[in-house]
Length: 157
Image (tube, rainbow, N blue to C red; front, side, top):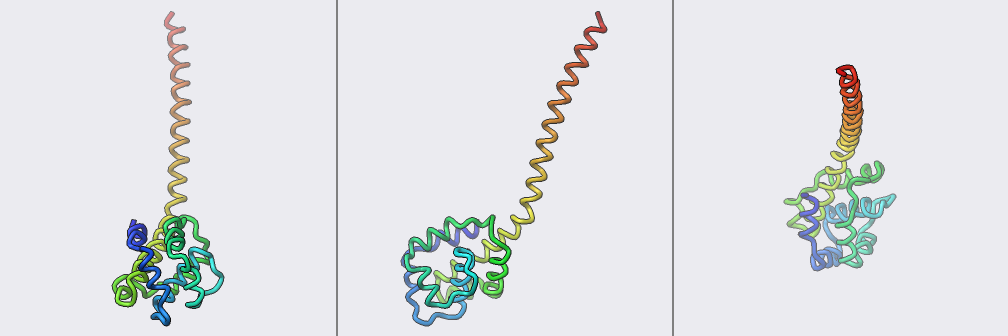
């Protein structure tokens, strides 16, 4: 939810402003490079020129961020992303660029969500299997109970 809220704060104007920076603060480069790892599974950290290219179409960039699948992030992508965002937070970033601050929120929350999801997803699957097993057992029990009733009715005659 926090990641979605951060994305909802992004607009074409703010991304356009961010990409037009000639020499942004290193933190701005880091957060956009983190987006490069997440969105494009880049193998190496993007430089600022490459970051600008990634944001060439601000609306497409925003759409890519909005449509990102946070449940399936490769381990290497997380490993590449985490060092870049370790010390970043919205408050420290908003004085450098509001768009970069919102991207920071998005990246941090997406990575956090993925870590939680990867721990919880197997548990959710186990619960699902247990519920299906229980339901099957209840159906079998009903069948046995019907047979018992039939046998009891036969014996009563």
